[in-house]
Image 1: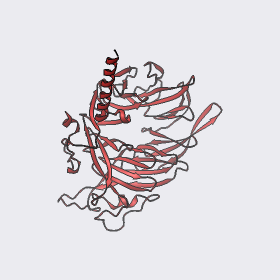
Image 2: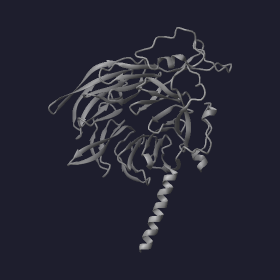
Image 3: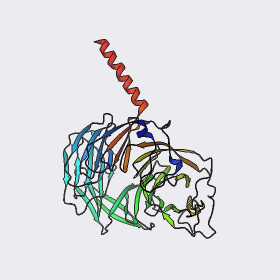
Image 4: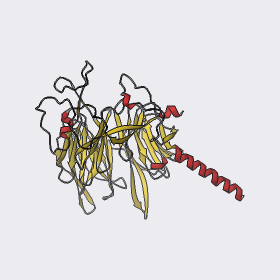
Length: 447
């Protein structure tokens, strides 16, 4: 069983697996040696949202929202009401009667929005007359409102009352939103980022488009908040742009491209004679100083403050990486695995890459086109480190959509196989079991 959980496995399909990614049964830096499989969904599970220190919600294509206890793995409540797949889910904490209360907001392909009480399981509010499905949700704590994005941007209060909206005639609609300072919002719409301003006048709120940032050449797949001064966007063709949150100017621009190796087996990369492989940025996460980006099947760690690449691995999984996190560097993929990584000093030259990739890190604005001969070695990058695999969590039989960390309580993953898995620290769980046994013995002696 332990071998199945932690051991390596064969690459799926025709994908070739790098020998550097094989990891044996002994994984001393991998604490997740126990797992608990949770069943309850009947279709792909796409979303996980933390409610409090013990509970989380899961949702997906079956239209169900399930509330779970992370310690016991028990399904506490089933929230039923949507007739089609869930397209977005977010928690909403507000003060009512002097107490903090956390609710769940869900959006569905059935063109409804619902507000749920995770304590009682009641659907407190429901809106069913939307013109189009909602693709993303955003809570603005400072204004005590929340936003829904699709073909239109809507602003709602805690009672599900529509405050204002703006309509867009784009088939793609709004796919992601982030909060900016001074009541501004950045929204990804196809190849553009639209900056909206929320204007407050007494109890009234109005929304207005202020600027269109059309610097991406293809569809934007990821939009994230970095810190109070910066946000980032990533596109289908590997464009990574760091933006100023106040004046919306470009602080760094990267177009990450890789070339196919020569068919004769040579390891060198020929920029002018090989087809360039464009890598889509599926997901990004940040801790305010660093960004980790999921680009194709690879991972890239970038120092925002120093404007330089910290580490990268062109092939980190057998298939596209779908979700990442930086606090404990992890990634999950279409190949069904969840992997743990560690930044280590680089003992050997890094794997070959186009010089354009590294030449653009740390520059302002767009870089100029390559004019010199193709580089055959990676330029010296001060502080470049290696990204080493230290743990491989194998349990799902389908693509792992995302994961949610509860720190010492465990890690939750969801997948296209309809399952959730809680991965637990085996040593910590053993200590808890021993403590429970001692407490039980003490109670029996007192009796």
